[in-house]
Length: 480
Image (cartoon, rainbow, N blue to C red; front, side, top):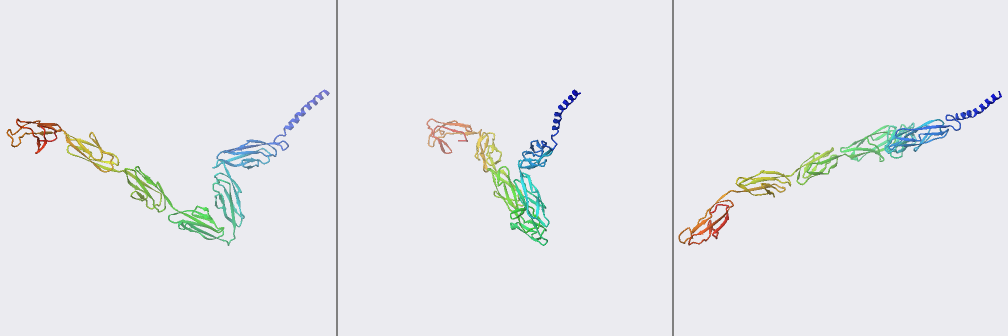
């Protein structure tokens, strides 16, 4: 029995360390005692990341996470574990249980840049939220709430505008501040609302005058003929771009309605063969515009139309302009007439030709049977074969063609006679070479004196034409 008892005692002694180890292991996460740790898990939506993805934190300690937007995104919000965001670092509150941090992102116009808009309110009301983090180029809205007995006097800053009790900034591109002011008034308070036109001739204004506290005011700006409304300003600051400006009377106000002359665009276009300048003109309502129309060399203006204008020389002046319009110029080559005439023995064609400035024209010469081209002149041209081509034509001109016969028989006759007072025979000799000859043929007449005679000379029409017995010439006409 002692042996058996000793065996059980040894077994109990061996079991004690194991039970102690299990007890210590049971003191892990989920308890509040010393050594307790908790897991903080971080997740990020589209547009960025958060790191680390998880952190093991001792009970009551904090953890920090880095929030990184992608390009074109900004941090929208980071929540969870009772933490707060400073720049791009999110730090949890004291961690006493497993928890999660969640980051969300929003697109921005500035590559992830965000700006802080701070809102302040004067006495008599509040503006919320006190700050807003805004992506670059985005806007932010604030609620303006007057206290009892107060009304909103003005809200300014960040290029915003007030609609009712909501003030919306313009696109935010830097840190800026919105300021709200309030005014209190009793039932007997009146305010003076004055308004002026700039320029005075630009238009008229209705609605100015004295108004009870809190009354609705509408100022209406009506442009004069030829003018357009631009905006309302107060102390040099734009307050509205609507011609009808409505607000509540809570203070004296002095506003200016700005007007500008209407203007229109006149566009000028030119077809091939010339130009028109200027290409565009900005014209005040009811005014005119002038354009210079210039043909290229060898071209002439055909027409200029549009904008109810008229052409004088090469200047086109529009009518009074009351809307955008277009002026169009067209051109055509300058042309000249070349006239062709032919003498006896042939023809030339065409009889006339219309030729663009600086161009040439060609004509065909056709001799009649038995004729050849003799000469072709006019228009500084040249003859090649039976084609006559003018020089560059810069004015009306004429071509003249002449022809000559190519097969002609000429009669060459010759007789002899003795000089008066000489003895017989009366003929004095004989002649060789007389007869019929083709046109252009060579002719040689030979005088042979009779015995007792001597040759004296050749006569034609009573005039001496040669003094040698042998007389040579070319057949070009009948001769005796």
